[in-house]
Length: 286
Image (cartoon, rainbow, N blue to C red; front, side, top):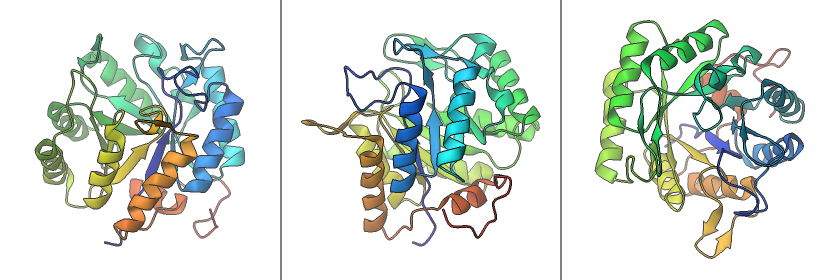
């Protein structure tokens, strides 16, 4: 298998704190440094949330702007993906940073249960977020917590609400949502290929201890992989992950075992149909 594997690093999220793992990057400067280390380790997408000084989630566009500027400076070519997730804000505040024109943004197209709440993604908000992404040239990453979300993405693509081939990420292992189930995982892949074509790119994310398993499944099956401290703060039951880069290096090792080259940023942008950064040529080294 020779198709390059894109590694996405979810550096912070909305929930993990330094009490959970001191390596969780909270401030913008910490996030830039952590992204740089992960980029050098092999990650080509950074999935970004921002936090307040007290570590609570934030949707402050100024923080997103500073983070974007720092990553562009220190990680040239890296794909910047902002989160529009519901833990960081309510309603349209979730998309208030899309005018900054990141390369990508997460888009949850339906609601589902979370451990202690309903993760609400009402149709009118989903439509608005998708419209903002179209307007600002931001490619959505469809976060599929359920099979219906993949079907919804197809419906939206057919209506012209999503540009190009959708990039679907399977999220498995969230308590009260889709558990880690190999038959379901395989059917997700089948569904993406049936709806969007054999060559449609897809990714998978596992929560907590399931991160390693989903990395292994996705890489072996020809998909792309997400890792990072947002989803999992440990290397194993007894060992905290020392950094986001350490989790990226683990994914790189899985790629090597499966004879998958790790995608450079140039490869990742080509696979996902993303624009090249201004002033950077396709042949330029990462």
